[in-house]
Length: 298
Image (cartoon, rainbow, N blue to C red):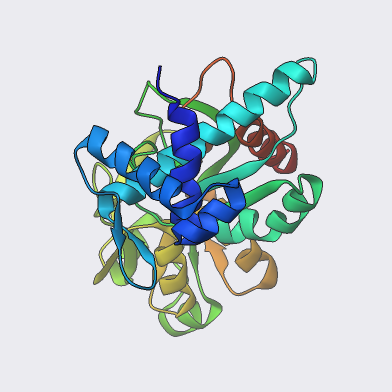
């Protein structure tokens, strides 16, 4: 039987060090032996993984995919052996890839990253911030932070926090354009709306006298594709936005933004989840990070 894990270790060393010679020194192999093992993998897969130049080794797109998967497989093997040897307890270690929305990442993960890494010094954090929905497997991501309802039932998720949207504007905008007292007053204002949702040009409100829900037009000349973009547009004084509270809470506390139409807020729940491809033996680095976030969100 082929030693696939051993071949992967050789390939990872060559790809990371960009040199057969350096990989050989790390693994105590000759450069020619490293080259032959990499060629064996390429021959078996029927595709080129590394481009050899006179100065270095360059990954092909296929090589980049193989490198990411190989790194993860080798980390899982090491963790499994440690788990068994350690009586069922593994120390979080290795590369942890996390993708989060821009707003959540800036508000929570970036300020907490140092504390997490100090607690788990053998973990290396690869953090990317984007407001688009990514494919965890395709993007080689361990954990994604998603806002809103969960749609992919094949993934595991843990709720980090529950928020709701509030209607906000800058004091400067309200001084120039007036403060709306009722939802119908929005017809005279510039509303910053989202490009998504069932009715992007309408906002939901609650009648404070009887609790009934209803919608009203939210006219405006700009739309945003995420809460972080809507927040930044509001902060310029462009108009009134209806944004997740966790995005703008520090701005409310500092006075940069003011909440309006409080009595009409329907408090629609907006949940934030940590999403991951789960199984019975979840990698210690993934479990540790999710548990850490849950601890800090309480």
